Image (cartoon, rainbow, N blue to C red; front, side):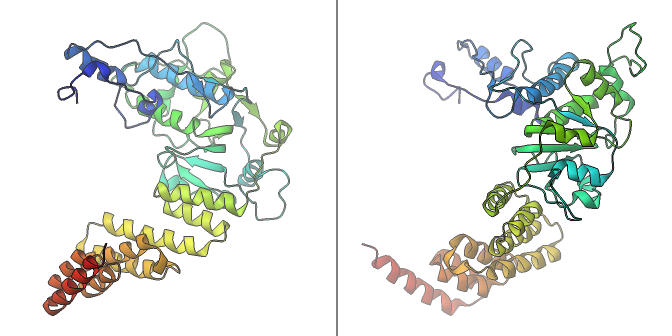
Amino acid sequence: MLCNCRDPNRFFLTGDTAQSIMSGIAFRFEDVKSLFYHRKVKVPEVQHLTINFRAHSGILRLASSVTDLLEEYFPYSFDHDHTLQEQGLVSGPKPVLLHTCSPTELAVALAGKKQTGTMIDFGAHQAILVRTQEAKENLPRELKAAIALTIFESKGLEFDDVLLYNFFTDSKLKEEWRVIVPKSAEVDCEKPHYLVFQEEKHKLLCSELKHLYTAITRAKARLWLYESSDDHRPATWYWKKNSLVEELMVDQIFETGDPESRSSPEDWRERGDEFMQHKLWDVATKCFEKAMCPQKVRECEALRFYHDARNSKDKAEKRQRYLAAATAFLNCDRIEHAPGLLHHAAKCLYNGKRYEDAGWLYGKMKKFDDAIKCCMHSKKFEDVFAIMERQERTTSQIP
């Protein structure tokens, strides 16, 4: 772009530096600035927007503590200026560290004290975040009714209430977290032992901190942190020492305000649509079931079959999955009035080598070139001329 642009000085670049904090992303805006320098293009002063319109100050302060650690130990891993802390428009409660409690107590805390009975209802604006797919599958039964996502799956999403579940307990790093404990002569019986930081030895801590930042910033109103073991002590000690979190028993949560977990069918439908856009089929299906939208459930399941087929490596299995996806699309109630679903069905039949059926669907959609290609594959050459005649008639009718 710089080489082909007539006037590189008229570039206008904007972006969110927080995106480069996400684990697995190595992009830095500072690197972009260096490109301008080498092209001898004047780089104007960078303007920073420090107001966060999404989360309140309580959550932002905790997130900033993570970026401060990244800047201290891994300063070249992301764009950050410690003099420019993000500010929220409103103040809010500190994130809460939950003392060890039962899964049922956790579920009640997340859903609200007004819940009764064995089935605890969770809302469309609440989520449980875990580290891995395995951790999600192993969630206690009492928590399975809630929206549960891995931190990676939650990128780009936001929720009013977030429970970060066993982040440190399920981490492969244990002793390494002690590097964030400051070295001092202060007597503190709760303080973990100090560990000297060595960049090469502790480089995995960088991705862990980025992962933690991503999880924290998914919450807009309430953030709860729960650990079933003591592996969290270095981080939680650091946060408590800096007054960034509040340590509560489960029954004390309700004194800070009852979480609103009730959601309307429309809330669930909107959340399901959002998950579909992010290709999170399982949780999208759960949302549509709660929204009582059986048609959307079928659409979601069909799309899941389709993407499973695309990701399959085995040729025979791939073909069978495409055919299963085609059947699922054709079973959708409104497929006659949904060209996108019909196109997916035809594409799945084609990839499943059911060329004759795929050609019939393409012909129905007036996608004549695709229909002809299917006829050639199925050796139905006599049908090719019929389709070409139909295509010519259709074209001649266009004014």
